[in-house]
Length: 235
Image (cartoon, rainbow, N blue to C red; front, side):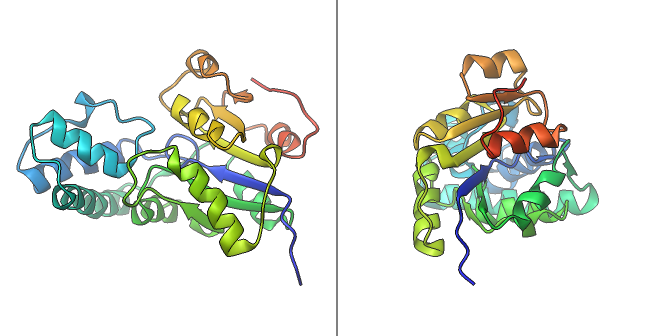
């Protein structure tokens, strides 16, 4: 049976789908120590909405380390390894309204994917800890990518090549919790949905001028109404 996808739903992970209770930050601090021998602190860096490899580069710059592929790989590998250990002990939690992932995954008119600054293995570890990995057909991950905005174009390419699906801009929805997610969605003229379940308040996200803005996604019907084109902006 041929499936015709009419909508492309692209999700950020951290602060949008899940809360990791600081697991990501802890894993990165441990990675700084393991990879570089520095008792560092990720909070010294503006890391929200960045890609994992870019964080490796920023850490090298911040601590005066050589910015080489080897250093970056060592940091990312150590990060994923520590993340897996931490989430085994203290799993992430799903944020409000995430039953919508299962609903959308069952709809034949929707192709649901990830658009995230996580490397693939890191994203998989996080989502498997909340039993949500299986809801996504594909992901545009940040392996070897420093510019988050490139991932949006990559997501469209994956949809076209792997699923034979092409979408007009108004058929694409990018959902995230930071202004950088909004910016990323704009790269492909997608409809942007910002949700204030991460580090940014509703007021701060409003400054980024997303197409739709939510405090959280607990109102599943309102969210799906936007996907189906029968609702106006909701806060």
